[in-house]
Length: 144
Image (cartoon, rainbow, N blue to C red; front, side, top):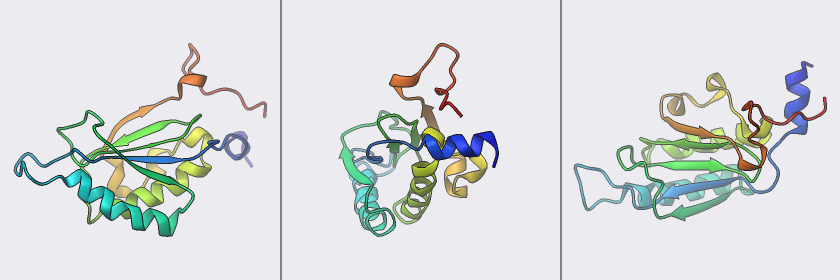
């Protein structure tokens, strides 16, 4: 087992993993359709079946209006990943698969090659947790 592999086991995100879905997202071509609300409706049953311990919540805006539908995956001491350009038909399965990897990753980190293919080109941001954002930008040492 490599050093990174042993740290990953010890540095799993603590607390609940939360998937936030922007319910105000809408398609530019169709001002009336709230694709974000449709994404939430499609995502909840998939997440409940695949990862019932994960909290799925509606949020009013994630500020990525040009890339609807948008979701964020976060935990109290893990990275926050924001993905855009998701569709209710294909997004939920990819998000559920990502969350499974996030739940066991080093501080929720999921390398690009390990992300579901659908999400690889749809990353908007990867934000480190405030509580472990040292000046050098590295996550905290797990002591391994």
